[in-house]
Length: 431
Image (cartoon, rainbow, N blue to C red; front, side, top):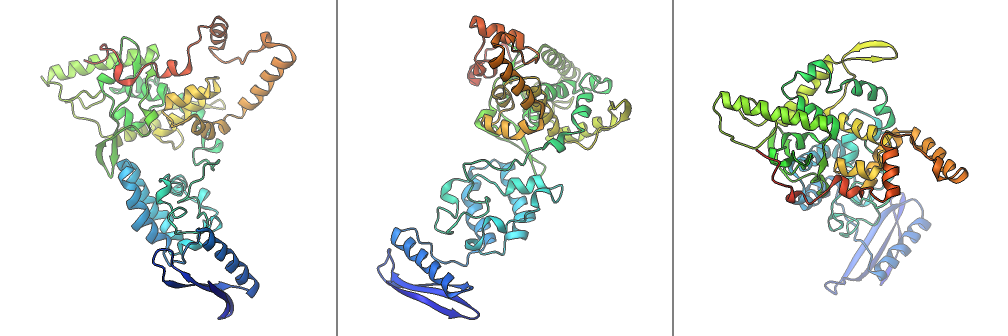
């Protein structure tokens, strides 16, 4: 192996030649752009060490844009849901490629990412999510010999903590009170034909696609449980039936009496509508047009926005009409926040929301409930200093839960939320 440093323009570069491990023929390698001879020598030493250890990465002119569109996206898109694939393509073209596409992949490092991306525009959430896709290791430049170092988290996700791209405390502040005022008991919502849909999203935090794809066979009225199995997702306004967003998305949810009653009333109303027009059951969907046609998921969002503009609510003693700008998905966030604030264990909340794991729930929502930290500190202090008999979190249902725990009757969290394998639900669910 022969090599050294040399002058290149106003800077320095390194070079060396060595037999190609694959062909045995001698090849020449070089790289320029170092400010000093010493820097070039240090880089050469590092490259030679990598070559001897089998970790050398051949210099390449491949750009970030070429890698993302020609190699990375084709490698992962077969494993993506249609909506996820469409989001990746949009966010790459609109946010990532304009900012980083012309850079050489091997020169892309974390500081090269725009520092203001996370807070620069209303599209920040989409940008941040596109910057942290989760392909398998075989499709990342870190493991395909394309890069010497970990490029900006976009293509080499780490297993450690990451910055949350979900709603922050600021995002939720001022909205939680408004959303609580948008309760399904509001008159204009209570009289809505789809009242059961609005109460369902408020009391379960279900995703829009899960609501649009919910079927009567997914509901067990006898056991008051619901299992969303086949979401209906809108991609460029085309509706696709797909698997649940995560394996945990196919979960068994316990329903409260009010929600169950609303669903039962909706079932009877739907049967009456179809009887009037003599329509045979063309599908098993819970939420449809009166003539039985499926609802487009985007319409659910549109109708929610209309209701939000008509809500009358109070803040600081003042009556207001119309909620602040919110999304239907914000109701899901509010459900999670309210559940955690009420003392519901994060594991239960995570399973009811269908998160892939409880860490996602903790990373997303724990920081929007500052009171939980103080509450935990006071509770643990009383436990240690005064004894366990005086401890009470003061959350609804805790007395019953503590009593059940003492008698050994407390249900396991998985039994409470999942109950049984989704495919084994009893026959009392559908009509």
